[in-house]
Image: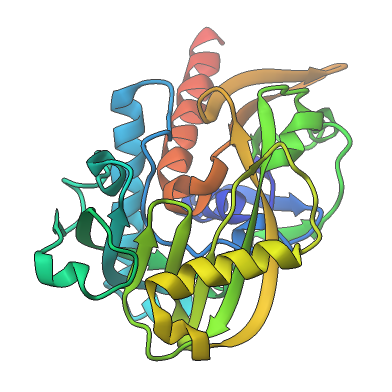
Length: 336
């Protein structure tokens, strides 16, 4: 079988990695307009799922999240973990708005520790918070993980090709199976008007003493990564596609984060980054269909619209997408 994957971010590369394991004899090609400049590279990569995240059903969404956690945790247990940028991390969520803000019904029963913060732990930070939770989870550092994934793919024969597609139908002549992992690109490729950009801006600072993550409400976060680099965030600008760094937004982010952890005032600013999350106003789209072009046709599986949870849930939606592809293939063979 010849398989084409469109999209070079976390969803596309994870799809290719899982296909290598499941379809041993398949010829896999990944197409992307850019492999080095995707929204995945901006993400902090903390495994935390917001309550707004949604698949087609509650049951399927829960499976996606569980399968994703297990996928990353299995890599974490191997010697490849440092190269793949995966590790465990613990930290706190604090809030004044509501006790629900510091809960996460998607992962409370999945991660090894999720509990209420103690009275002493409220004194670890500034802000005078009313509610708090402590939990241990996983971190996937995409600056490491994506290059690692590309190397794994190329070492096993997958081709990575820089190419801009005007239509997915261009691929039907040479590929039997196509995975659409294009994120925001699906707006034009699929004419999907439910897909909008969710602009995010973060700061990357040098603070090697930070080993614990902190959230103040959901919009302020401090997430330590590898090599002493800490992500300070953030912002969620609905339907904005401005890729320029806003200095006022950076100043506000830094002020909020320093109010939570005053020691960050001495952290050196490394860079400011902007990314456009592919947010879908309906649920994340993981669906299979036939795509035809003249006398050729192929199975097309969509896997996009993860919003700010692409890194967290890419392995789970990918597993489901591959399952849909296999079912459609079996159905077509049975009809023959």
